Amino acid sequence: MKRRLTLVLAGALLLALLAAGAAAAAPARTCTFTPSLVATFAAGDYGSFAEGMAADSHGRLYVSLTTWGADTNTGQIWRVRPGAAPDLVGSLDLTPNGMMAGVAVDAADHVYVAVVGGGTPSTIDSAVFALDGRGKLTEVVKLLDGSFPNGLAFHGGLAYITDCATGCIWRTRVGGRLAEPKTPWLQDALLAPGDNGLGANGIAFRGDDLFVSVSDFGRIVRIPVRRDGMPGAPRVVCERPELVSADGIACDAFGGIWIAVNAGSTGASPSGALYRLSDAAGLQKIADDPGWLNYPTTPVFGTDRCTRDTLYVENGAYFSTYGDGTVPDIQALRVGVPGLPLR
Image (tube, rainbow, N blue to C red; front, top):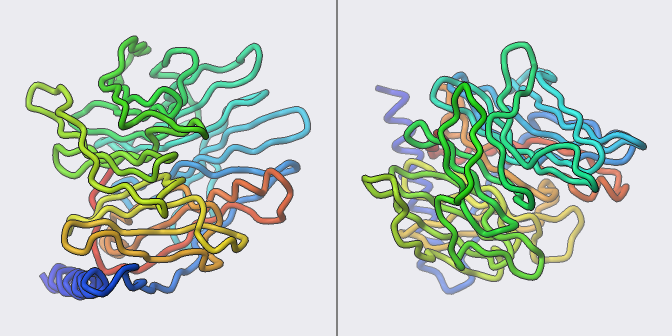
């Protein structure tokens, strides 16, 4: 009870701060949180990129990392226990041009990763792979050629997969047999890519409402899931220039959506931004090129008793692939608000 009261009071304090920022003249006042470094990952010979992250019910984080070598391209799944060194728990040959993307954990703590196929000819499908306890990654969902599976979440026992190349959302049941959906659950102009080819990207559920970030337009779209399982009408809840390159998103228990944005607005290097969107406070700037953000890709809330009010932010360090000398990492922010799980 004492722990719950602490969370409620902390959340109330944060909401008061956010509301005060929203009431001020635009742009909204920045909320400041002090990050702490949780883990770093090696860049490899030709750089590496961390794109997906999820937490299981025990508070362990699972991170997808793509590492480029001279003649190989390897996808890795790392398990991170805050306070301990990361463990490599799975790997997959993605040669020549494949990439690991979103990670999700289902209600039974099974771990899944979205994989983008690539190369001519492609040696790996655009698909979803499941990780078993022995470190083996098995393809469980095969998507159509040309798909770019990016965000991944579970809801009602079904997997929802954003496709940023075609501007759609795939939905399927993941079981013992390979699923091969042929028709998207939803395809809509609000989810379509723009000039950079990045449409529907980050994904998070709040109840039966699905929220999706659309990178090229700085757009957050809400899609209700009807009782019959079909999508309701998509609606834009926010579209702002500062959200262009929005990537992963996470929902908190007080109605907020935390948004990782690959690039900040100041031109600094390394670059990146973090925002919180809510009905009460509007769009609140949390950080904009603060120095500790480096192409942030995914925000994830902790799930155990000690980390429920901690937001973990994955820094993809995309430009490490161009030799900028940085490496992917995870930063932790004590934000005082518990999150909602991606399942």
